[in-house]
Length: 512
Image (cartoon, rainbow, N blue to C red; front, side, top):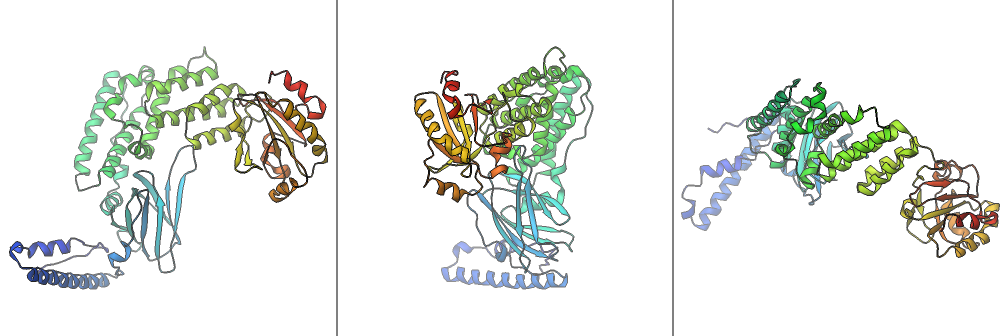
């Protein structure tokens, strides 16, 4: 007699395979009719087993759910579908998050309908470990593009989360074993020899961990993430406990990065970068290696940050790591110094990194800590163009920019327009851009005004009246206002001469 035990709603999809293996003797010699009859017999056996499963679940007070009911969707190559049902429903949403440094955190909410069912397709760039929250229950969930996850949540059962589908083995392993929190014991190396020995022992223990804990049929990407989480958590324990200054100053000579096999830029690196332990280790390792620079009392604060910035490329080859560390250096320098002396470093970062989220973070941080004035980098205003599309002040870096700040309700602004038009004509061959920035609150009124008045040159709207970012970020108190910015993007003056009061002579002094 075949005895089947169903525990907490786990669906045993291997039953069909087991039944088939018992009846496949000499099936190569069977006729087509016999094979069809055997298939029908197997299907009948499966139906009986499903009924027994249903009865067993009912005995245990568990709701019966057809697996096909959940596993009936397919994801694209760049998304994952999360679908399932909640029993003992207590909350209306499931939350999926991922910590991403220097940009808005990844956060997705999955609503649960009145029947306890939920389904959502989520864009996922690379395999990664995400945070899963349902009420007061926090766990991890492994997501990978192109997959489909079924999830049954039962807060009254021993196993609160039960995963089905493509990544069920990995997620049930992650939830049941707490594999994500595994790490080696922290120690306190004092000598170079101790550090080298400890480093090698951690590499060995990582392999032992992988062999002992990850020896089931796990997805390769998932197993690699768990293994690396163990590795970098363990390495983090080393760098956090090194007290010997000599080891701190030369840490890069004693930790052999070639043995860590940090992948080249790409999908695998994005997966690794999703691990907090990895990012934290890289950050602490870098800070430790820069201790000698930081403690050098003979150089200025700016030079310290510049030397740290230049050191990044000597330690890390991966562009993703380089951008992450460089952003952190510039971010900290702005927070600590709050000075336009940092402009060369900020400008260097703008030219060297491509991550738009990092760039926006640094730009916003600069604006918050270093208020607009002579010598500071101009706040990066953006808005719709009258000609269509959008304009960003940053697009004009490399040229002088003369900005005419105005509004449709401003009488003195309109008096300047004929002279402004002539100014643009006189400098049409010069290395200078003329931008009119309206701060009107109503975009439709701004557009309508062009029917009655010709506004020359490039025109954009940064709406809001006196709450416009143009007014607030540049600390303006009146319109019209005229601003001149140099090719580096630095403010020359917030009160340049107007077209009616000598703007042409003023601009000529700059050789434009």
